[in-house]
Length: 507
Ligand SMILES: *[C@@H]1O[C@H](CO)[C@@H](O)[C@H](O)[C@H]1NC(C)=O
Ligand SMILES: *[C@@H]1O[C@H](CO)[C@@H](O)[C@H](O)[C@H]1NC(C)=O
Ligand SMILES: *[C@@H]1O[C@H](CO)[C@@H](O)[C@H](O)[C@H]1NC(C)=O
Ligand SMILES: *[C@@H]1O[C@H](CO)[C@@H](O)[C@H](O)[C@H]1NC(C)=O
Ligand SMILES: *[C@@H]1O[C@H](CO)[C@@H](O)[C@H](O)[C@H]1NC(C)=O
Ligand SMILES: *[C@@H]1O[C@H](CO)[C@@H](O)[C@H](O)[C@H]1NC(C)=O
Ligand SMILES: *[C@@H]1O[C@H](CO)[C@@H](O)[C@H](O)[C@H]1NC(C)=O
Ligand SMILES: *[C@@H]1O[C@H](CO)[C@@H](O)[C@H](O)[C@H]1NC(C)=O
Ligand SMILES: *[C@@H]1O[C@H](CO)[C@@H](O)[C@H](O)[C@H]1NC(C)=O
Image (tube, rainbow, N blue to C red):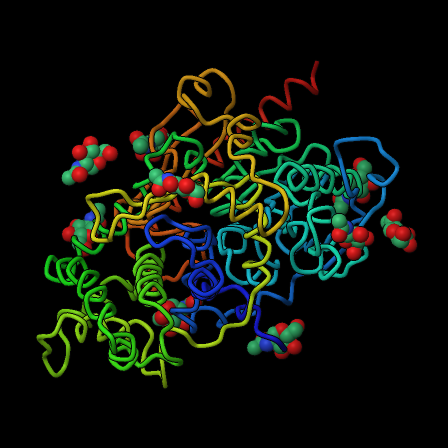
């Protein structure tokens, strides 16, 4: 069987830099489209392969397909065509419709659903306690849920066929399926909690705001819903990467900070690129210093984003940099020792050929249309400045797809500005969970907005940790506690819901 992980790890990051430096080597200072770190709950799992395959949860999963509407938002004849959308159910722990037992619905994100079934532990770990039905729904245009005749080549072929690929259609899909399922199972009174991580976490929180009659609450893990427009400073992401490294080791931070100008200096010499290629054991000769710099930058970013126990990749990279064996004095030798510590011993590094994952292809469209997350670097980080340039971003997207992004649509449609003021009186029952070592937490909701729109974060946590599978032998106390707090809050919502339901039934 094909490993579900092969298309889910953060290899796309590395692919980004290959195209960014070969095809789109237009800018040297501005952040390009492909430098923006991707979102994904599962990006760190590659680092810890044992934890992935130990459980065999698949036994209890049943796969279904729903005839989904192509376009929910107008009534033109072509909008009515349908496609098969995959969803998966685990009913082993459900206490049934007659008892109005809860439904935990995982909202798929920018990847096929397969990896989520195994790794989104929040559902499987808590199913028994909630006596819940588990439902996982795949996001349109990923995995098996491909519109327009099921061929990815056709569906992802051009902007006309990609046009139906957006978050509003996705959460409308989820609403339709959940309503359909409740009817089919005669579970109209079962409370639904939607759960998502990263981009999927944004979808979960937006779902609760747009479809309060479908889900009574949402767990939005590591959802940077404020990283749009100018709400979050563009430096947010790389400032946290920098902070993570500095906290792990001051000397490591200094080494990285000093390395960029040395790379530039060597690279500018006549034979410089071949010297760098040799130092970093590249798979192919380097074509530019940017190829190397992007690789390193994204390695540091991934290490920080997925800086999870028990490995703590930032510590591993810094272990290599600080403690090179045999001891190195040359800065680039140290940096390379960090690369080897992180990736392990490989034949070569930096520009190995990579397969293009569905996530790479799909997420590129999404970021080039509505998910414009302006991550850039101005100053005060361990990286060279590389400010986000919206005009060049728009140009790149237009040249790829023929249509420009709509960078203000997310905040127009879902909000985000003055969120505390707005949601204090509007909305309820959302948990925004974050780990503050996750660079994306800079765009997350980190304060309690009201009694029931709450922020639950851990200072040492990383991206989406809380919703991944629990591990009793390696999970630190603060992570166990974070999950407990979330479960208690959700139980409170359900209790309140049953009380409200009993009143409405009695009247
Ligand atoms: C917990 O983590 C350890 C160390 O990575 C691993 O050996 C073990 O299989 C994990 N247990 C579960 C239930 O995933
Ligand atoms: C895992 O599930 C598959 C499919 O149901 C089954 O064939 C296999 O024996 C199971 N493996 C283990 C280790 O339980
Ligand atoms: C879904 O659509 C297919 C093809 O149009 C059709 O054969 C099938 O009966 C439909 N299923 C349901 C449940 O409506
Ligand atoms: C649920 O309730 C219905 C109607 O009261 C009844 O016919 C059915 O047997 C019940 N199902 C279960 C599983 O208890
Ligand atoms: C887009 O792709 C569809 C399906 O392959 C095709 O019918 C259509 O002509 C293409 N449109 C453009 C503008 O290329
Ligand atoms: C860093 O950026 C901030 C905000 O853009 C600016 O106020 C500050 O002067 C800059 N600091 C340096 C050292 O350039
Ligand atoms: C942003 O990019 C545009 C188009 O590539 C370029 O003309 C402009 O100078 C850039 N702005 C900055 C501040 O670098
Ligand atoms: C928000 O409220 C929840 C529930 O009362 C609490 O657990 C959490 O620590 C609070 N978060 C912050 C950032 O104060
Ligand atoms: C977070 O990690 C740091 C260093 O790794 C440690 O000193 C600190 O006690 C931890 N904080 C919590 C709340 O666990």
